[in-house]
Length: 53
Image 1 (cartoon, rainbow, N blue to C red):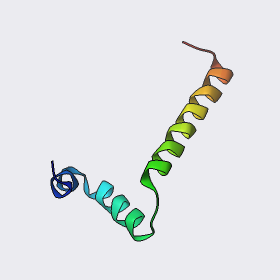
Image 2 (cartoon, one colour):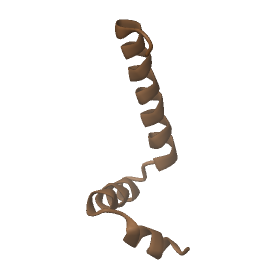
Image 3 (cartoon, rainbow, N blue to C red):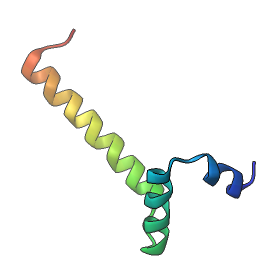
Image 4 (cartoon, rainbow, N blue to C red):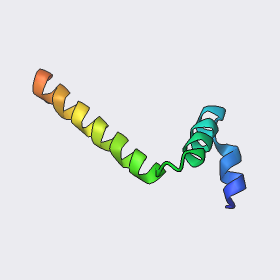
């Protein structure tokens, strides 16, 4: 698939995020990895507070 085809499959919100990130030269891979780390940390904190299922 070409980038244009992939881009068109994104939601408007996702396209806006990509456009802003590109305009500000944000590394989207780094940003995605940080988001994953945050989610893992949040999961760990919830497990500490409420125990594992």
